[in-house]
Length: 372
Image 1 (cartoon, helix red, strand yellow):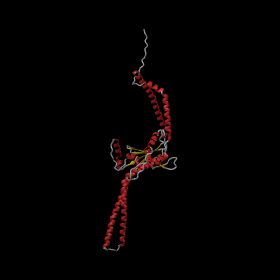
Image 2 (cartoon, helix red, strand yellow):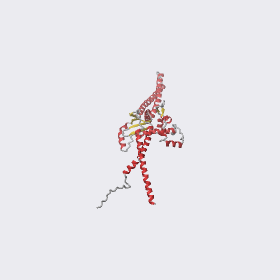
Image 3 (cartoon, one colour):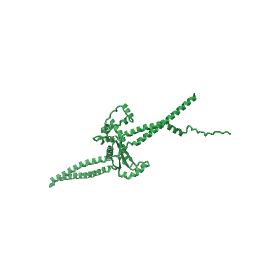
Image 4 (tube, one colour):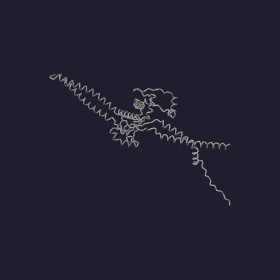
C-alpha cells in the first residue's frame, strides 16, 4: 500500500482581493518611514502650535425689539420661516436682524470700526484698529516665511499697488491699499449671527488680546444699535424737525401779535372811534388765527416726539460684553494631534505608494520579458 503525502493547498489570493497579511507586512517593513514622517510632522505641528498668534473672543447677545405688530406676529413668522414661507410682517422701512451681517460688512460701517480706539499691552496710549494693524501688528517671521511664503513671493512679483484715496461725501468710496488690508482682517475679527428661531443676535469679536476684544465688541454693538436707530427714526426725525421749525416760527408770530394787541388796547382805552374798533377787530382776528395755529402745531409737535420714541428700536441685552479670561485660539493640543495624524497618513501613503510602484515596475518588466 502506497502512502501518499496529502498537502493542504494554500489558497491563492485573487487580484481583486485584499491580502491583509501582505498589508500588515508592508506596514511593518515601512514602520521606520512612518515613524520618521510622524516625528517630522509632530515637530512642525509643535512649532505651529507654539508660534500661532493668540486669539481672545468677546461676545454679546441681544434681542432687538420690534413694533407691536411684529411682536404679536413674531411667533407666527418663526413657524412660517420653518415651513419655508416669509410673511414679511415688517414695514418697508424696517431693518430685520437678518440684515445685520450685511450692515457690519458694509464699507462705511467697517471704516467706522477702523477708527475704534483700543488699548493694547506695550502701547502707552490707545490706538485705532487701523493704526494697530498697519503700524504695530507684525507677522511672526516663522509663519511669514513658511506658511506665508507664497504670499510674500506673490506680493514681490506684483509690486506695490496703486494707492487709492478715501471718498468724500459726494463721490464713490475708494479704499487705500492699507484700508483694504484691514477690511479683510475685519472679516475674521467681527461676525454676527442671527437665530431666527429664538429671535436673538450674537455678536462676536476676536482680537490678539482680551481687553481689545471686549472694547471692539462693545464699540461694534453701539455702532450697530446707532445705525439701526438712525435708519428707523430717520423719517420721524425729519417730520419732527419740520414741525419744530414751524412751531418756533408760529410761536414768535403769536407772541408778536399778542404783544401788539395788548399795546393797542393800552393806547386806546377811552377811544371809541370806528377806526379804532376796526383795528381792534383786525388784531383780534389775527391773534385768534395765530393762537389756533400755534395750539395745533403744539399738538403736532408732541405727536412727532412720541412718534420718534415709538420708532426708536429697543435692544434688550441678554449677555453683555465681558473681558474674556481665557484665549479661544490656538488650541495647541488639537493642532499637535492633527499634525501627528496628518503625518501618519502621509507616512503610510508613502510606504504603500512605494510598494505599489515596486509591484508596478515588476509587472512592467514581466510584460516586456514576455513580449521579447
